[in-house]
Image 1 (spheres, one colour):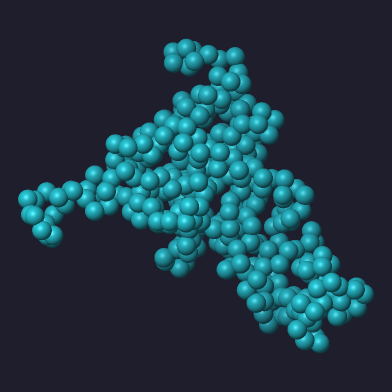
Image 2 (image 1 turned 90 degrees about the horizontal axis):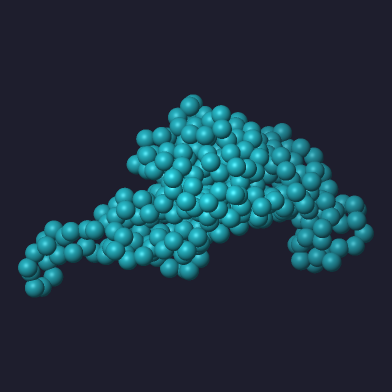
Amino acid sequence: MVIIKSLPKHPGIIKELVDKALSGDSFKNIPERLFQSLFAKVALYPSAKMGLLGDTNKLIISADGSCVVSNASPYGRKTCKCINKCSCDRKFSDPSAGWGWDSFHQHWFYGHTAYLFSVHNPKLKIDLPIYLKFTEASAFDGVTLISSLAHAKSMYSGFLSFDSLIADAAHDNYPTYDLLKQWRIKPFIPLNNRNSSITGGKSVQLSKSGIPICADGYEMSNWGFDAKKYRIKYRCPLITGKVKHCFYDCCCNKSLYGKTVYVNLAKDLRLLTPVPRNSDEWNKIYKYRSASERVNNRILTDYGLEQPKRYGKKKIAFFAFLSIINVHFDVMVKHTNITLDSLIK
């Protein structure tokens, strides 16, 4: 279950979190830190030593948030004997739960968000979770990423090294690219049209050289550098004589000057990524993002995290961490000579 959140409620919060992360804040004071430590010791570290994660010095991690529905009532339970509607205090079985939007099913849900880092091992064709954090149902994934990545990086320092990060367009923002550059982590994040610095608010495909590509697949013509706004101007290749024919001429060129696109070099960390977007390598790596969806499905469906009678964030988190531990145990039994009895011992 994949969810794409709305924009964060507090503009600039991602930049503030990135500044804290770069200054050394590991965001370790979170409620589930004990669960995370136990998960790492009993499941993650053994899996890494068995080679199930792949190359631990160059891990490609996939980040994703998944909604976890609470079975508690959002209206609480009456503690009074009033027959009619009243304003008396009510008892809530899951007071930390809240409302969030599930864009996969297109409806509101009452519960929490489970934010996961997962890895895909292409040789063994397995998907394994390496980090789990619970946040509010309304939490924006782009915000959750910063604190989660900083904490995971601190937890696994000297043992796991993150080479690349795969995430959806909700994570497409300049502070995140700056953080990933500082930590030497390659971003594999699709452009979000809302954040585009391309004229008209629409993102365009870039060639391997970072040059905008027109609708007919040609590189646009470089038409000079705007020093005042620190951007490069590109024009339609047909109008400038770079190509002779274009199928989309009548659609793109609304004037004799032709379609114009600007690329802001001050923000090239986002537009000009280390691995060019839509290149063969980029598309190959980005496919690994489905690992998050498969791991989320195992936790929610196979292990029934949303089963009734599990009220409260603490209880749900407890069963969630048991689930990701079992995901590792299942893989150990299937792909190594280890037995379930030896795991229990």
